[in-house]
Image 1 (cartoon, rainbow, N blue to C red):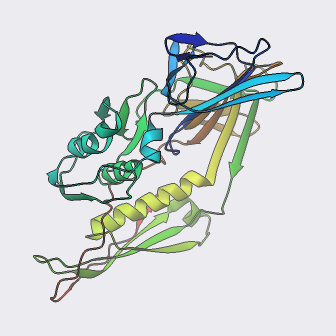
Image 2: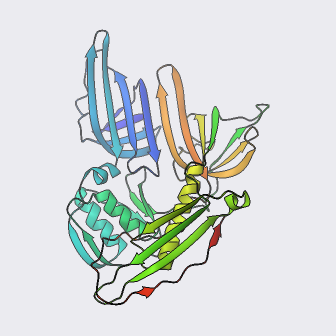
Image 3: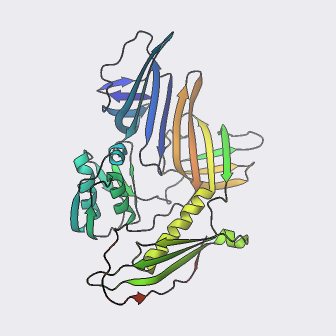
Length: 364
């Protein structure tokens, strides 16, 4: 693993960690090296552009966040840490602006370009035009970006080359590797495989109760309702209902999308596979990267299925080889239904219309 800073590569590390997670806004890295001669690299400065590489492959692009220079008896170390391009969006406020009939591309450009992000890409067949976008003082750039993405059923992340992508999971991609753990050890390529199943945040049924405030041209509506069930828990006769009140839903379709998203998040938290493997690459030589699909065959866990790679961590230290920790989730569960985020509207005088009750559907 090497860091490219100021045109110079630094690779003589005593320890390093490189984290990447689709559900965490900003990926991070941290390295440590000894300085037996006391020579501090002059190009290493806070805020410096960094390219994190594994071999010749770039796995992250960002900036230096923090430098720790420690001197003690028989000890002289330098620790450097940083994050990817999402860091400036998480830390900084969004530019204040108001726009009407704004496309997703226009909203993204208004939010990220003033903060120095120029490479963007939208991965979606269709995107909606927002009737009105109002960014107020104090709104962070990341929250504004997430709200615009979620209104189209999408999610933002940064690719290794620093490109901001607004899209969704692709469950049609073929698996990039197979992780094998057999009892007799034949063909095993996994150091450890940990399966955690939890009922703590899993629910058999989500019911969303919503309302739409009136405007100057449209009367409000109340009694909007949508409900979805977890087919697996229903088959097991487990009843764990959850009711959520949503003030952002304009109609039953939006309420149903919120209910589906809540149910998918519930299932996402219900089961996690954590695998530790040697090295930082698949058997085909690809660096491990979130968004990949992986086939898992584990006889002790009675698993033979494809999983979605949600996060990975590259690490190494003095006296130990390079390893990668993979966080795997149930394939096809991470669903991004469109759900707009809006500020409260002023109530308009007039009668409200009663919303219909959506029939309960099964999500298996």
